[in-house]
Image (cartoon, rainbow, N blue to C red; front, top):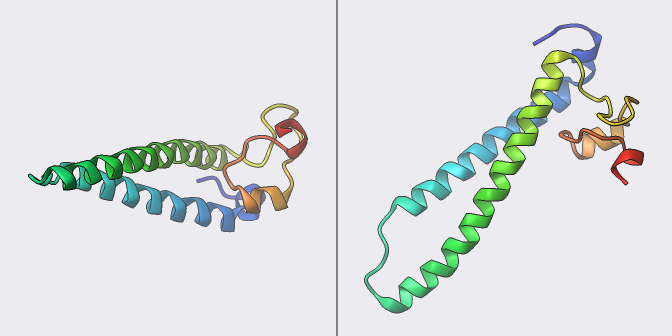
Length: 111
């Protein structure tokens, strides 16, 4: 990672991103383990498992999408371009970054 003011300014955000990435990777791994375990022979239980599987597939998809944007934010941090709106080039407000550390657009461009 680059050192300097830009990186120092976002050290807490980097930690948030890394922690969230670890949490999401663990979630995806847990979901994959659930998919790999056997299913019940009972037809009623199979129906419940099928419903559960649909929910797990959606949770896995959402986690994988969030991992992509977190990785993109971490790359921007490393390159020194983090916190700059990808559309207008203005700085993204600290409050917005604190709330959504992986955003790429300022609030004006996001609307």
